[in-house]
Image (cartoon, rainbow, N blue to C red; front, side):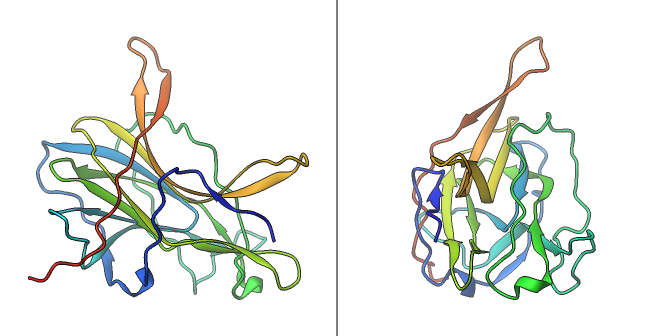
Length: 214
């Protein structure tokens, strides 16, 4: 079994996260006090504003990767969401492409491929990103996994960010590639007078664990 590590140095496992209801993400109505976020995932991403110390009772799905066959045909049982990616004029992408992987469940039904889309998000409240995680098929009956987790960030109005969630890779000690679990947000900082964009990793806070009663 391959060792899978979290790129984020602050990871919190969500107990029973798959049981939390979800609805599609909706952009804020107001045009002021918003940031732009490019969501990149080959698993799933939920985005929610955090009020006080309350965990979201319903999460808002921003993106979910779909499964595709070797010929590129989409599997209708595992559709990509959104089906059509949105572009709102953000700077060029800076993070590398996430890997394609076959999950440990129903391996013959295709591989997950990344989906990329862009949103406006509120900045007057802390912003939580969460993922259900992923399982990656190995050899024989072995598999690797990325657990469900969530992180909270303070975004600033007028700035651009990339939110990354899913399975990536990096060079291993044996010269091959090692799979890594990824969840985090990077600020896209442009150098004045140039087209150069430099990613700056943001420091997350722990997500609230208690769903408050109404």
